[in-house]
Amino acid sequence: MRRALLLTFGVGLLAASPAAADSNPQTVGLQVALRAHALYKGEIDGIRGPATARAVRIFQRRRHLAVDGIPGPQTRRALGRLGVPLFGKRTIVPGATGWDVSVLQFLLAKRGYSPGGVDGHFGQGTKAALERYQRAVHLHADGIAGPRTIAALSLATRVPVEARAVHRKTYVVRPGDTLTAIAARHRTTVHLLARANGLDPSRFLIIGTRIRVPTAVSTPTIADPFSVRLSLDRWSAHYGVDARLARALAWQESGYQPSVVSSVGAQGVMQLLPTTWDFVETIVIGRSIPHTTDGNVRIGIAYLRHLLHEFDGDERLALGAWYQGAAAVRKHGLYGETRAFVANVLALKQRM
Image (cartoon, rainbow, N blue to C red; front, side, top):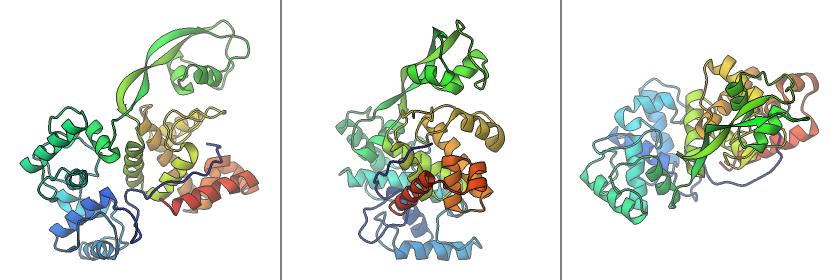
């Protein structure tokens, strides 16, 4: 988690957009749902401007929800069938209705494959448009929007895959070896090494011990920036964390790259140390989480929420605790290096 690299990034999926900003696909789902309640009469353009925000507040007031103008989980559920689920959370099939169908239709139209309207209902027009798009980008033209189609629509590119550990080989421990060094050398994780061999990561390795090392094989798991943003938005909504803050933190830590491993063994999009992962699984969430890109994001955001709660919602102190540890923040305040990290993340948040 200790990286001090300031990078730039575009507007996030559910962030409010200035008038000149590009349209935001997820906001299309919100606009269509609000239109179905006769609260939004503007253009379905994905720009969360004053008319969209005003319609959200009116809806929240009528449903006796917190009137904050933010389409959080409660508000989206209250919107009904067109308010859920977020785009990218499920495979979208013909006959489906929902927020994600609206986004799908909007993206198809934006790419030049008109579905005949953006209304949140997956009919024959949407299926035909989707099949034309899939053929054009060399995907299987089945008229079903699965992960690869969703990512391709959003990126206008073919979709890469990431590696997932499933096979094992044997390694003999040599003088000076640590689980962290072995994991980095073989592109796996300390957690997987320890789990595969029944080892305690805090103990020394015995020279000559034969350990099983998980190795990587290619699997069709999406590992592109758009799917990472979808994951960040989904788990931010789930845990009640500001999605802009989560996106900024992830971009600062890894640039949304799932394969990044730091010199101290922090891994993935959120740059999590194995000890942090274990803490969140055991204490915060209470169950094991798959070691995937989405799992890494979930663990990171759950941990961020934990720190925000611990520091009474103070983002500056919570980010400081993320970087240098909560106990050190309470005892010493923010170190100079930590202040730079926090400033970078908060500056990025304003751009997300």
